[in-house]
Image 1 (cartoon, one colour):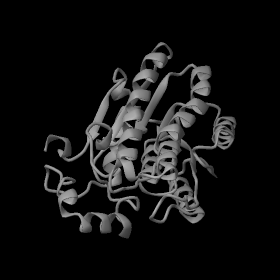
Image 2 (cartoon, one colour):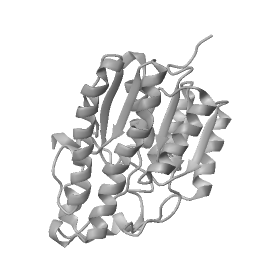
Image 3 (cartoon, helix red, strand yellow):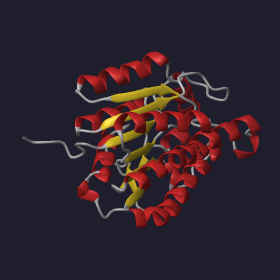
Length: 271
């Protein structure tokens, strides 16, 4: 009998209602993992495109269960310490262990320049894209250590976590911060055989990018849009392309890979 690369594992995925998060949950389930999933499932004040809904999260549940895997899915704001800890505790109680963390939840936003950002735009971006990643990891790590099975943490950064990009200073700052968090955690968790890495996607074909707000920003500033082009002849990659990298990082095939910033960027960073 052929089993998946993650058979018997349990994975926590934030931002799991749609887009990359749903893709990660489904791919991990395809490889044999049970899933603990959460998403905010409501609109946030500084975000100018539609965010996920409870119905989106229910669809993630349906797709995971269709693979004959178990899932605990809840609505929770990644910035809410108690809510995130509650989801983790419920999932670990249900499944008995935690092996994988995908710190995926994130939002996107643009501004004319860094000094025109409002307090709300800055604080919500940092709160979701950096502090929320920290709170997800903080909630999960004690259960991983207690289980004594080692594990893998993959934090979703961005190509904007490696290079500077105009008109999105708050996003760039948050995604660079995720890399620093990964590097510190990689050293702290190595004695427990928990590996920590980041993935750095280029533009991904998800509702966070493929929407009227983002499309309008690019159309209104052709020079900015030109700077978002990939080296390979593809406008955007698909969510599963990021999920496949995460599956590899979480598998025994990458058992000695830690502290790595892995681009999945169609050559964007080479331009």
